[in-house]
Image (cartoon, rainbow, N blue to C red; front, side, top):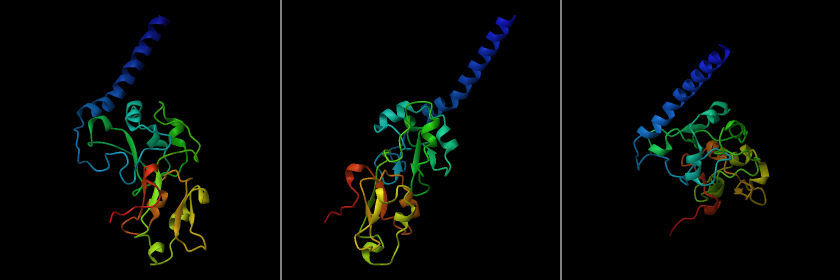
Length: 208
């Protein structure tokens, strides 16, 4: 009788687990693809994967099971999920730094049940790098004193500082990991600082 009871409980638990996974699987299958959906492409301004994510976006999408644990433990609630911007991306997490940036607390990496997010030291995280448009940034065009991006950075002078002689002109350094807090706090309406892939550099280049 004890064995039958154990088997009954095990089967019931397995059934509940499978039922809980059905919405995520169904969402990925049913979500319509849309090439024009906003923030659907890696490398787009301020479109970030959570810290510790696999660098290959296709590999990250395959590894993520859409469990939502990362968002549940995120203190600033910056992690969002794709909905109708592509079937394979449904329930895949991303961060819109302009709306709410990552604070590099590491909690999402700790609770990820797969290898989609790997526990990584905050200075080794690679979400991209901040890029500044010096043709619009207030201090760089002599339109006022700011420094918000430098003040908010969780990595301090390791990631961003001021130009020599303390002219309040921000300079992004190689230690920037692309958390996006500088983007969130930038007071300029056009957001002349954003997060890009590291290879694009920290200074925006304008075509003539």
